[in-house]
Amino acid sequence: MSYLALTWLHLLTVVPALLIGSWLMLRRKGTPHHRQLGRAFMLLMLATGLLTLLMPAELGPRLLDHFGGIHALSLLTIVSVPRAWQAARRRQLIRHRYYMIGLYVGGLLVPGTFAMMPGRSLHSWLIG
Image: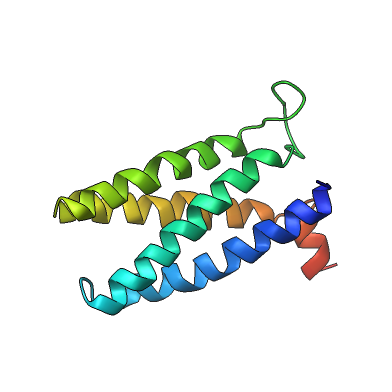
């Protein structure tokens, strides 16, 4: 699959995840609506993490001519989603909250900030 196709698939998962995650952070927790949106958020984040592993690093040193430092956040996402799910199922709500905040910050805000930096594809697409 081409880099461009992977990028578009990634945007199709990460943009809704950002919107849903932001909504979930601001709204009441534990409601049926929260649970439904939370499932969608987790699936989108898992898909995002898996897709980004297929995308080669653009900047910095690379391992195996593919993986860069940003891929550590992909792995963090892939590991955190099932742990957050498990914590919620076990009613370990504080643990669930920490995993979800970590997913939101470490899986969306930090990489999103890097993606908008000059020299990155998204920056050139949106800002020029």
